[in-house]
Image 1 (cartoon, rainbow, N blue to C red):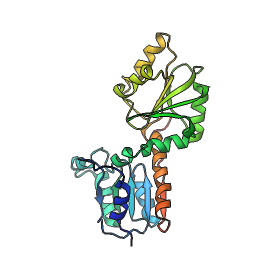
Image 2: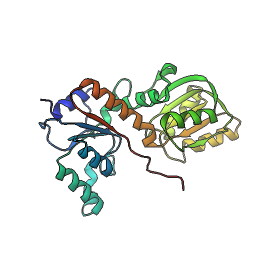
Image 3: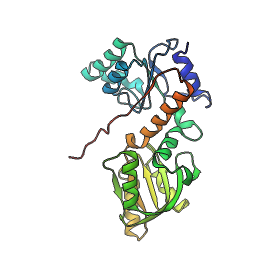
Image 4: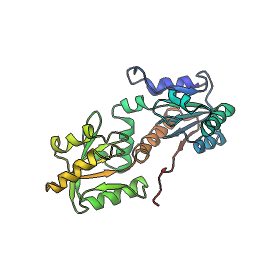
Length: 264
């Protein structure tokens, strides 16, 4: 018999214990036997319903279930009908929900970043793994060509960019998720002589504005903003693939989530 706790132990075994981690079993009992696993970037209501219909009783989500990095803040939503309906559904179906965020990012290499690199097909171009970024050197491509490659390989219909679309790029910094803040991204341009930074999301008044001023000063710097989900979801698909290899007798379902924003 394989239990929820067995899965958690396997997922966290290679990383030193993390104090005050958000990676917790927010619903369910650790001794429950696993019937199926659903792996997702975000445990949306739709994902929860599909997971239950597929017979999975453990949902592994990268981000918090209740609209906050710290699910302990869910008390803020007490008496909110959307929050209550979601909580009622989880408890009523007996689904277990495990948050797998901090530990996955602490894998060597970072599991989320590894998934993004694999999805882009840039494994052979990695030159250095930094704590919050991965550096790659690709054959020279114009910014507009890189945008087309990303759209095709990640299945993204739109993204945002700063820079001349004809800029030739070869040295690239990748920062998945919410790592696009200026203190993370901006120093990489000069320290590593980067042409382009690609990240999930970050404050719009920091790195994007730096690139705007760099362009005005005659530098050929560029930025691509994928979106948080779009940059991290491949890492959860990688996790699902890994779980299938570890537990061939357990159904493991990868549950992709559609981008939340639309072009209007």
